[in-house]
Length: 326
Image (tube, rainbow, N blue to C red; front, side, top):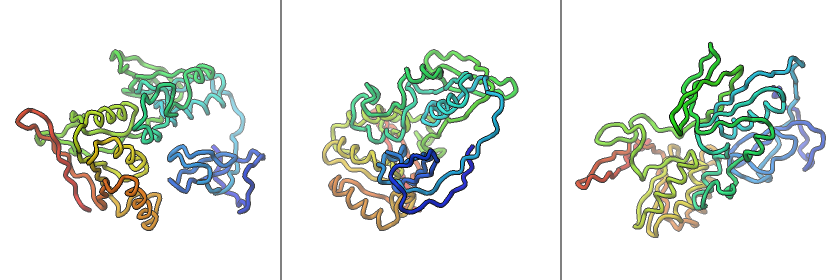
């Protein structure tokens, strides 16, 4: 890999470099650092434009000595942006190897950070209208990259060098032999143990229709269906006051029936604490409230303690969110 030796770069650098030297660019909105020759056109985390990037410095590339070309089987576990990029990079460096990308979802690798922008859009994947899908099936076929979707990894046997994969469609299981494996499985929204309960017992897989997550296209489609079924004013709660939550907030408020309101639980003393100081956070909240007409309440220095679900006399499940101020 390249050594991260940062060289000093003049303050008045040109808009376009033609020297092929890799540079580190930081997004001032979310803090993401991207390595490329020229200023990135867009941040792949928060979608900020090129004007949001500042140059941190140059990278001194240190390449390994040339050796035998790898021609074995490389399996990439995880069909998200990291998995797609790992497969692309491997193909560029090892044109003769076999590459298999394994993903649990039914969708080709897509940009999860854009899900928060797609709350009010139609079919998220139809003609890639939301710009979510990174590459189409033809792109992978041209590069001889095999994509196995609807496949959940059960185990990796490092002695036999096989990966046990179960189909989420027909529940069949097969072993995939490998020579090298790359883990690009990402992460899920953190749900603390015992957070969601029904009659005092923990619910591992929430059965309550009005509890939603923001992780996959199916999550967003389920959330839109839930919102679409609401006919009277409601009060919604969003756990987490970070970039993704606040990007989805205006669309959520606009989608709910008139008279609805939203509370946002944030563990720190101001929203976007990883991106903004107190002053700019307050300015952001002020502008946001002007857009949503005061229908949003920020509950700071707090965390979700539990969501208690109970069945009423009609057998319907209703839930109450309890919070702990910290």
